[in-house]
Length: 321
Image (cartoon, rainbow, N blue to C red; front, side):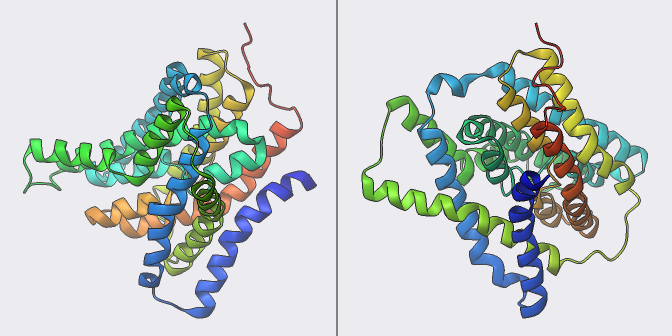
């Protein structure tokens, strides 16, 4: 149990430090702008490039793993989306609810927790999951918002072009592509550049988690949205269980890949869900509540999952061939 606490406490401790610091200093949320810019455009891209550039390129094309992972996450999104429609949230509201149930914090928390838990071998599945799940989410949100009528001033070709552009030119996706290219060419950066990338990569997780705590502090929970009654169990329970079952059934994968995917599926709702809700002016306050509550509750659920993995309670493959 001490080992599990050693994995969990530093990460959630950084979130807590950001939360407490924001409450004490009372800086406006706009003050976080340059920190977020550093994280999104510099530190995390450097981390992903560094991880991928050192990976044998043949390991980056495991399509069975990619399709299974993305398929499970998409199924969770569709399930929560349908429940949102039944709850009369409308297409726009149900879209944000679906994202809240399926879009985990795989950018801020995922790399740090997975690599700390499973070592450098987790870098490859983390990068694949991050890249392809983000492509899916980046495509779903604008498409369904257009269907809901939130994009009346844009033609269908403009919407499609906007989706493609947002995917191709996202700094995380660009860093992933450059990293894969470096792996394919066996490119090794010169020592000064390598050292700079090391500094940036090491700063990514602490800065991201601290910023997440600040965001949670500056967007306090005002009321409990009823939709969280199905979003919380979908994100923290159904998503990791479905991921574990699907990866065990559809492939004979390395246990580290399986556990990494399950761990990332168990993470709380991504702060990007709030950003998307804010962008479209839909379900904004409740999206913030989903991020806050899933983050708090994930302290227990992620700790329980790691305890099961580390103590051999969960086999690497439920259906060995």
